[in-house]
Length: 238
Image (cartoon, rainbow, N blue to C red; front, side):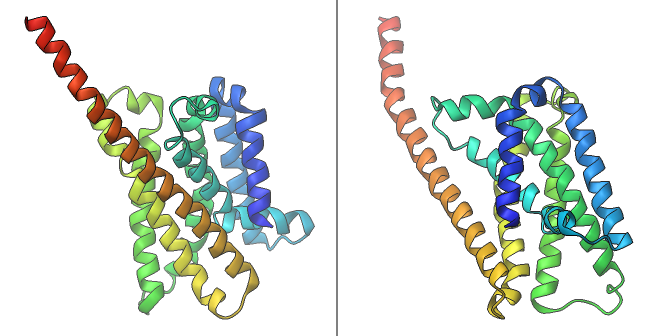
């Protein structure tokens, strides 16, 4: 259910709010910060209720952030002439920043939850998952900061592209992290955890297939263009 709610929210952002998000992203960023603040306050205050039961998992389980990151990643594997790519590419940066903001709620909540247990140490699956979380958080901070126009304009194009390549390990490691945290519950028979892992696996698997397909297609296109370019150079020299 939380995946469906996250999907609906994401569709609103990319369909109904695409133009205002592109022209005036700051109010959306502020709204995201407010929602994260409401979530953290609600968890501290022990808020309950039907509305909260839908809102809380979006933040705590990082469902909304992960889905927005997924949209951002899938835009990159769409065909260059795809109408969907043309629609989403102008707001890709804004969606990435929103995803980073929404992920903060998840990071702060679980970071505070496990901070008190540092003295006793972590072992096994939990230790690996939390170590992975630290790497993912560092990657997210770098990618999030460089997504802001003011930072991007202060960098060379080559440097910015090199940093943006970290999006690939970030996305895949995020999936591994979520799977590790959900796996114990899934193995215990928790239906929500089983469905969540299945959905995440299908989405990430589809992305990997499309990413590889696009990489092979781009390489083939580059190979075909090279002889043509050589012929043009030879003709010019003659």
